[in-house]
Amino acid sequence: MSAIRGKDTKPELVVRKILYAMGFRYRLHVRALPGTPDIVLSSTRKIINVHGCFWHLHRCRRGRSTPKTNEKFWDTKRRENVARDRQARSALRKIGWDVLEIWECELGDRVRLINRIEAFLKRENTRRRDT
Image (cartoon, rainbow, N blue to C red):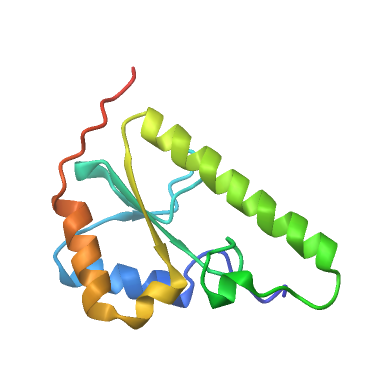
């Protein structure tokens, strides 16, 4: 499990290529923002986080699978990931960022994924900045 990366994962690269092809430019892993988001589109105040289904307990087949060894440790770790995601998402929205979460299992249907990203980016950010 130590070989699992947290940055520049294959799902993240797929989403980044789609965004680039659509003409969007972005920043990666901005530490100044809560949760160090995966993809930051500063000009539109939009953030895209790409989550692995297993690591972030998605409702799909991969997210529901559990390791056979050291089950308690992995369950705790994965639940902490979900709690941290929720807290970061809330903090980002509070300071005026619009957040989209893309799950690893969604990458299979590329047309649907592109449509979802386009809809998110076209949607007006109704969140206001709290200064």
